[in-house]
Length: 128
Image (cartoon, rainbow, N blue to C red; front, side, top):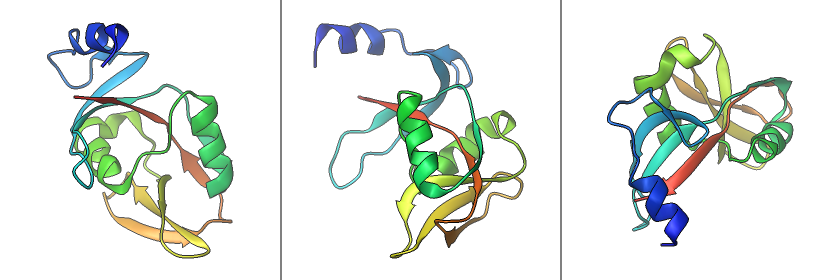
């Protein structure tokens, strides 16, 4: 861990929803496949009417990535008020031509063809 990362992690906000690291602190996301747990930050801005590939490009341009399905569930639980009551692309593919999404009106997750146009938000992860 470098000095910058150590300094950022030393300033983790006490409350979910607080401003942090250029976005809004969403909580802790569990590590995948033995990886470290991570602090999750929802970045500002939103893309509308974008297919899955364009959603990924939007997230990269925003300095982050599309959230995983698990991260979207965390965002729904902790920061639902930061989203439209609509569906948002995740980073996870559901097959050769589809990807998973989160409906922020009901909390459901399902898959659509990657060519469909929807919304996207970006997240940043800081390892613990």
